Image (cartoon, rainbow, N blue to C red; front, side):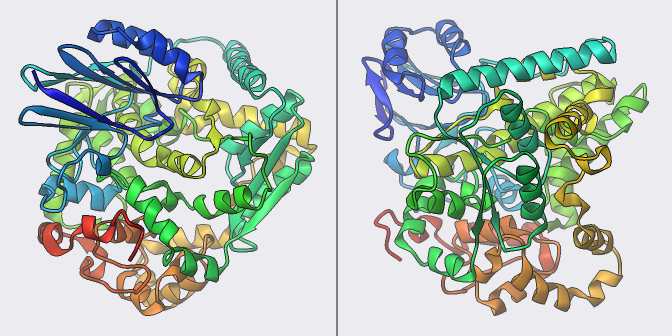
Length: 557
């Protein structure tokens, strides 16, 4: 029988065989979970819980690890020789990562998407749990098995527009009323972007008369997203704060011991830490300058509807959709940090096709939508989008993600394709509420940061021959005018050496995480030439730098 070592942060609660992390009375959950041993029993227990949560059960013959349907709190495990190691951070498992070399597949995935797919990590001896999954390790044989604790499937139910709208309103009201009961007067803090999701969340709080609300936006002064967000907050008479990201903030951050400590904890060889989503500096300033209450709840606007936002009209207009079309759409949306050479392109497309959750070469629209959305849920959403939840944990503040409430997720799976594509149903209701509570003209209700003339012009030119002529100017302006200001964390010469116009901040942070780039000094061990990621680079980068040496746990550089 294999011994079991459990290594979790201090905020986990342990009762007997049960280890629990959740803000919803963890002690009581752990007491009820203690003694639950079988896979079916653990799965049934998990389905009754509200996110966020993570569970580890050490039974006599097995170890069960469970994450919620957002993978809010990831779990990592290693099964080697006569021991099972499991915990919420790779660094604490007692596994030697310094001599480990990632596989080509894992390294390529991390570089191209910002996260490692399936249950792999960059460390071959450590695996990660997936969203809404019971991962079981047999203590006798060491074999690992997985059982879904929740299934996401597009299952449209035909009903008229009025009935569909009525169900949407009832669902959202249920979710927000539950949130308000839980908040019980506490301050609710909404990161307000220039898009629809956070706007809808704020509108629902206004609709239900919740008064203790603060919104905020961040970045360089005058950026399009913050400008749009400010207008929304003012129209709704809700307090709004702007957190100015100054060049000195970024430069001092990447040289600080706190950045080192955060990265060493949050980077677990599976995905980029949440700092890449640019909310980190804002949360730090809001919490440390006492702008927000100590017991506040942060409410990011992430929504289960986002996967459908990426679907195109082809999913509703055709009787059959080629499997390759779904692969094309997933590749275009998710493999985006660098341009890929032909060999890596072929590799990624083959992997995407193999991992679709449906069989067949010509799919019904529902099958195609399910394959697309399910892949994004298990990979992009749970690993990349929700990585920013670790920012709230770092600053020891609570958070909730209302639009991933299971009540809403269950409803959204039933929405017909014509109403789910591009989030049409949610967009229409958001516009309706904004006109009603914001007093804006219907023609103004649809305005988002995407309406920026500069932004639209940039994307229109980026894939044309004209862009080659303006690359030096684009690099000059991006370094100085990026909406979040992050490029100034690097020396300008380093930024210009790597940036070709197609990369984004995540591209740079992948190099930083792997020890190939140092933001503080500007030193570059290696970077893709001309912005193109190739198999040769991936292979060489696996041993070019020691990522575990870069992120030492003593907080020093």
